[in-house]
Length: 247
Image (cartoon, rainbow, N blue to C red; front, top):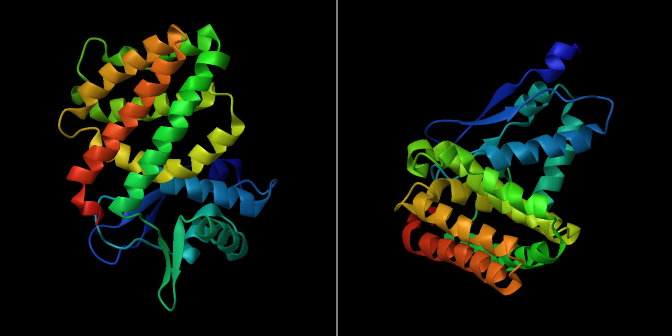
């Protein structure tokens, strides 16, 4: 396999039961490492990046297409999909195939509440463990939105918003929190991206973010923990009230 082929990004079309197909961004994998592990990592990331809640249509994965896109046999792809099913990202329907597992509204709301609990603890730990430089770097994540409103660049702001929350988790320097949040992230990220443009949530969120950063800079443990928790609790309430498409 040529080096050019190994680095070329490939858009893989995955069939829906109806409506427009979903595209997963994948590329051929490097055979020097575990093929199963690489296939798992790429598929998991592709699912995280995909807009899996844009419609109610079932999203079926084609094992043959995936193996061709990744440049490996079906065995590592099948093994990777088994791991993803065990983690709740995929589900097998007898005689029909393997589908991406989307959560119900109640499941998403419960996930956001768990996210709120873990991220708020991460913020608490960040006030105790993170360096001044790492906390200060949080401010620069929103430099591109100083002279404009988030709504004018909603896609870019959505990415910055997600990166901000991931950064707080990392600043906790707690690997167990990081690992647990990674499993929640696939579905919570998709909902954050969908809701950030609604009801002027983007403008309100950047205000919340600045208050959180100030609390972290002051090493105000209680305030930082409270602000982060409230920020996610408000998202849970918004999803509960407005995201009927999840049912």
